[in-house]
Length: 137
Image (cartoon, rainbow, N blue to C red):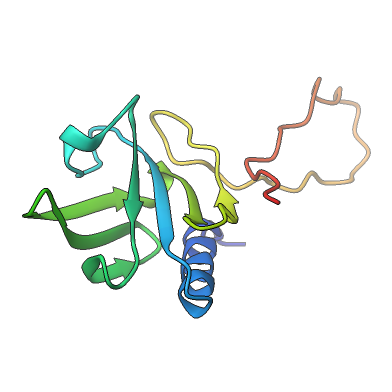
């Protein structure tokens, strides 16, 4: 079986569309690293929150690899590039509803793999991996 495409980008697009359809303001929470192109003057504690509403950005494109758009910061137009693996969350500003993701420093989070139910003589791992998804109310 071929490698599956991670679901993160699909979930980001879905929450963005949900926010727009409900007249809410979609925001991204981004963990900034060397591959992330954002205005560093607005980064606090290695994170930045970006408004990705169509009224705040130009040429928004969310694909399976990155979120790309242009926006003005302090009146200066900037080209923004955020790899999907650096997005820690997508949510509505008005009510904080959305989805949040675990960002692993140095690499994009990998999807959880389903354990096979075959009986073997090898010992079981000590503890299963925690899900990278968080419950948002």
